[in-house]
Image (cartoon, rainbow, N blue to C red; front, side, top):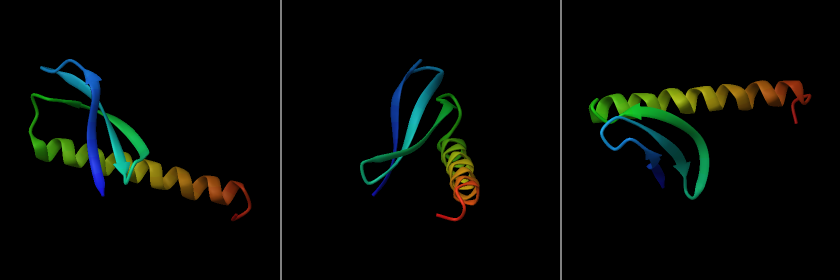
Length: 65
């Protein structure tokens, strides 16, 4: 399951969200609730891309493990 979970902030403004796969928090991002759902989904995708890049870099720095 993929979930985007609001974990706090201004309910009429900027909130913090967690992107989860199953129950594991993969990354977090901020989103202004006055923007639409499509913007929120793009921010979640961008946050995931950043997470994925950091995983790749860390594997490289750890010698490919």
